Image 1 (cartoon, rainbow, N blue to C red):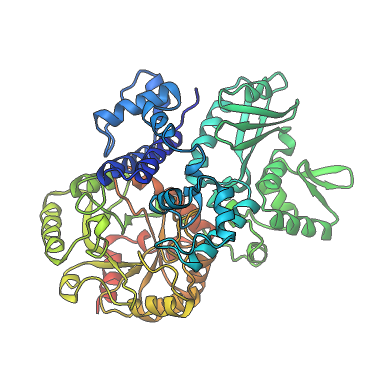
Image 2 (spheres, one colour):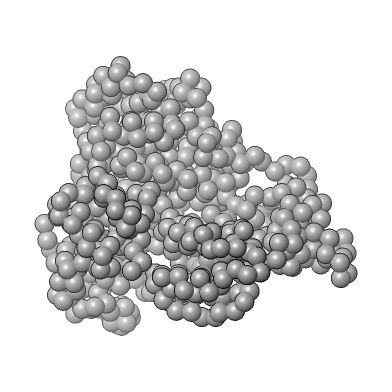
Amino acid sequence: MPVHNADIAAIFEEIADLLEIRGENPFRIRAYRNAARSVGEFGQDIKSLLDRGGELPKLPGIGTDLSAKIHEIVARGTCAALEKLHRQFPAAITELLRIPGLGPKRVKLLYDQLKIETLDRLREAARAGKIRDLPGFGEKTEAHILQALDARGAESKRFKLAVATQYAETLAAYLKQVPGVKQVEIAGSFRRMRETVGDLDILVTASGASAVMEKFCGYDEVKEVLAAGSTRSSVVLKSGLQVDLRLMPAESYGAALHYFTGSKAHNIAIRRLGQEKGLKINEYGVFRGEKRVAGDTEESVFRAVGLPYIAPEMREDRGEIEAARGGRLPRLVALADLKGDLHAHTSASDGRSRVEEMALAAKAAGLNYLAITEHSRRLAVARGLDPQRLARQADEIDRLNEKLSGIMLLKGIEVDILEDGSLDLPDSALSRLDLVIGAIHSAFHLPRARQTERVRRALDHRYFTILAHPGGRLIGSREPCDIDMLKIVREAKARGCFLELNAQPDRLDLQDLHCQMARDEGVLVSIDSDAHSTLDFANLRFGVGQARRGWLGPDEVLNTRSLAALRPLLKRTMR
């Protein structure tokens, strides 16, 4: 039975949701959510590990009971605890939780007061004006619910990049083991590192006798075979993800890889360049008349139209072709360029690992420095730090730095930006720190002018260093704040502050266009993991992918600098 880490995590999240709807102990609910995050971010496939006879590794927040449930889920695809909860609630009620703005408490209220248990009933109640009168809702919330329901109906299901990666990379590894297979590449929006993926396009080359199509259709995660042919097959996995496999001849492989990587707009622009040169470009190659003149590699396709190679992440027809023609393509940042991470949490607030454990994990990830940035006191649900606890942690970091080797800890805080733009902690608490990260964790729906002014005031604070996850979005569940990002970027430039690209897969915030905006305005971006456990540094790869989509090179990224080069930049913001 196919069970990926993402499937285990989804079951734990659903248990947590149903427990919260039922009004269970918040500590029990948090335990399941922490377990979901630990499993979802673990770098190895747990089922494969257990199938090989290995032991379940020690993961943050996973004790004896949850470990037993993981073994049960791997064996059965579900667990008795979830089945018991399903018997207590209507089958579709968890679908309500997928609507932005509807957390478990609101779903419980809708269920208790209006007997709403399906999306259709939710839509009917909203249209009838029945939701606005419930405590904590109102007309605006009711309107937002209707908008979210309409948007949900218009969009096909998309998978967050980090979740799609688990299915994609496992399938690609399986295909590489098929006898006769020579090349396997995942194309499409996945290769362009888009934050969500609708489906997968996989290209292979193989010897004539290869049974790759039969093996693909017989893959144990396939739920439905949509088409099965000798050169193209299409399936739907049990996760709901559609995958198309194409077997290409070696002489066409580069052209096919370019074509199926996209984007559509980029491909059209390349074909137009080809037409200007009397060439025809499609997935089978570059042709002059009937003769194929290029197409075995992507480089040959670009060369045929007079361009250097353009990285997949840039292929959105947003100026990359003009930059290539003018010799202005940037060398994009790579994971190996990162020297440190400037946003991480520990068990002192809502993290799941101790400070020293986080330091050693950062060192193992190849980093030279790590900023410890707990939440501040306003975020009580995360056990945010007050000035006294912050001072004690600063002392702890000083002591650890005396004994640690190969990694340096920086003293920081992720301080809440209050609604008026002030910070949640006094200057006396912030002045001792190496950096101050400011973040919005409340009042996400302020009007554009007020939200922009709120952030602008925070940036102007004497101890402000980095604006964390600037849009405040959670992919698929919370839209970005309505904010004038150009004004914020220019204010950061004037003040000498920096912007964060938060690599947490639910955020990937800055958005790619705002990365380009920061680059154009000369504002450095910090690619940070927002790590809450020792496993989370693996998420930096997704942040780097987003940065590459935003055209960021090493020089535009703050934390590609050595600690010696970084310190003066941080100190400059602490006026």
